[in-house]
Image (cartoon, rainbow, N blue to C red; front, top):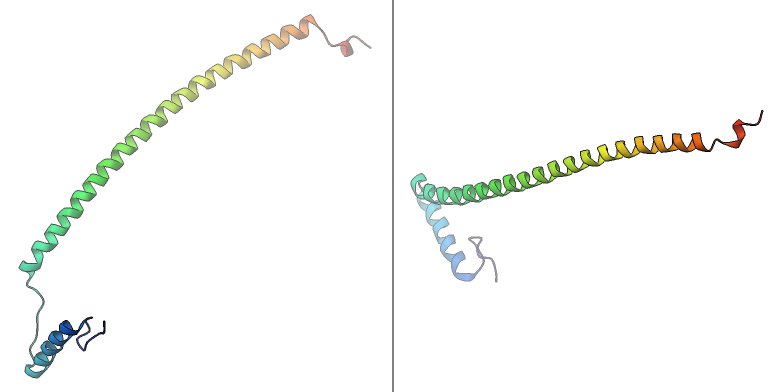
Length: 112
C-alpha cells in the first residue's frame, strides 16, 4: 500500500481526498465540521455507554469494598478475642510460675 496525495493509504481514497482539497483551494471554500446536532447523537451514545460502564464498575467496587470491610471486621473481632485469651493465659502463667517458685525455691537464695 502506498500513501496517496491526500494522506490516506490505498490508491482510490487518496485521489478522492486530493480532488476535494484541490476544489476547496480553487474556490476558496470553507469546509465546516459536522453540525453539532449530527455529532451530538454519537457523543451521547458514547457517553451513555461509558456512564453505564462507570456505574457498573462503581457498584462492583462498592460491593468489593463492603466484602473487604466485613472481612476486616471479622478479623478484628477474632484478633480481640485472641488478645483477651493471650492476656488470660499470661496471667495464668504468672500465677503458675509464682506457685512453682514457692514450692521449689532456687538453691542460690539459701546460701549466704
